[in-house]
Image (cartoon, rainbow, N blue to C red):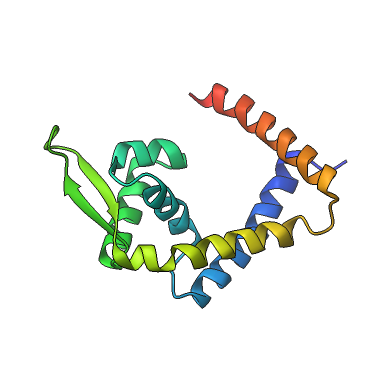
Length: 141
């Protein structure tokens, strides 16, 4: 039996390649940036610290990605009125324009990734991966 971690890792690498390719087709940069942008679209006004916590990357990676998304015109950083040392992140009109296409890319890739599974197997896989994630997350906090 193959290592579960290795299978997850290999699957993720292939998924990320497909994601990057599809995002380029809608003129959006790297696959990693979409995780950040999706959260900003869902929760306008969240802080950079909250974003870092949600995406499970380190502060430096988040700062670089936020800067690149800002330079590309997808997000806007505003100084937090309550804490002037902190920034709140907001999607721009450009981000809102590609939002439907981005969700379609993600839905299509999810469908492609699970195309060999029955609906029941998809639910089981999702539940098992969620359980695995929750266990690992608790250990890393």
